[in-house]
Image 1 (cartoon, rainbow over the protein chains, first blue to last red):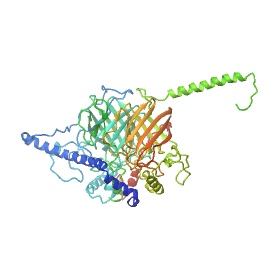
Image 2 (image 1 turned 90 degrees about the horizontal axis):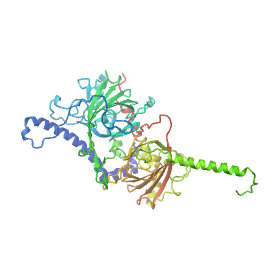
Image 3 (image 1 turned 180 degrees about the vertical axis):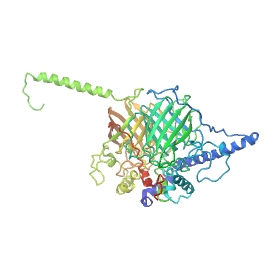
Image 4 (image 1 turned 90 degrees about the vertical axis):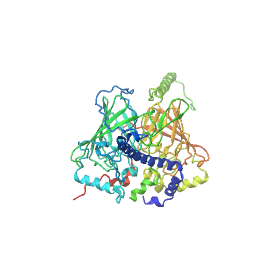
Length: 343
Length: 263
């Protein structure tokens, strides 16, 4: 890696990148989007706070954020099906609220973020942890200490391990990828493919055996099957390297994850439920629940959450297509790799 | 038949057998050609896991064996890529420093067309409206639109380009632009500029073999368009699957996740 600083192509790449407005624009757009996400979240609080006290003075109230997790019972699928019999649930999805900035307090203050006034906890969106009831990850003491250490040094990473793997273009991992930004689900005979903006997952529906246990992967090795409206996925071979959020919660490579994706028959919502078990890090298994919503042509595009554009074509119908290349913004340019050597 | 052959009574019989055999072979070939997988809309279905057995990634041009490459007769039309003089100089510099500069060594996105003949598998997921290719190396994803949409008017520079395709009978013709200069064509330092215009033709030779033909046009780098021909083979091993190869993460492999301190 040290070689990078002295080699001419590296320098060329660096300057080409700086010179290329398009690239810079694309990169800045993502950073900008992130800022917008944070800002919108803040604005939503502000509105939530002011709307009750001064509703009459608010000229443009923000759209209310739905913080509920709808009850979607596992049962029959009555919606449309694909040729191969799978429920047709493909398309663009995102969490109904929040992002990856804070795992147990999605509308709370994120790691490294400046303190600000928040509404009472019960008015903010619930923890991603739905069990145990206190919404906390049941960490063993040593692991909790590691999380706190990570948070303390997040803004001043004096060791390489205090840098979020995301900043190095590593995949978002499980379950973080399901609530970091938006995602797209594609369906094929024998497969479901999840596309995230930093990585993707191939869910095998053909019941083939898992990979040998010494193989460890950023997105694990997934086997799934449908039971009515519910996709059940067994994840193994997970390397435990991704965090659960900017707040630094983590697992080890011994983790076992069982996921359920329960789709509402109206095709508009699904609940993501992951049971996470790792006796080397936690005192008991815990459950993550994320309410997800569908985005369609009727919705306005939204950076990183529903990053689409209208495709150019001769016909008159609206065709929506992905607007951003699904590659890490720092991938293939020096930024992420600098941080490997220089935390 | 340059040599005189003595006529024998059974010769005409052999001819009939021979002709019958020939017609069987011909009709057999015809049947095989019809038995390629197809989507329900009738288009050839390339879904599956594919890989080239060629040495193309070691060097597209004909080359002798090197310490870091097997010999190969080349996969291009002609003996050399038609570089412009300055570009040839750059390629030679790239070649000399290939063991430091090849983006592959950093685990960076291989791009297009390199990902197609890089010696790791890729998986094609195909629908009527598009084809997604997931490359094992880097788990990067390429989308090829097959829904009569066109390149955007102001497209971004993309590691994998913007790909729009149409069907010409059973051949998929893919037109790709909007490249970057961050990707190489092979480990011998061959390269392109962001102005690369790539036209690929994908066609089944049989149900488990694809003939891949690519034409590269890049007026900033080449004096004329040139082409690559390789063959892709379907992985048919039992339970074969892609295994994500995020090797750029190896640099920090041992620092995550946090470990319990040893007492």
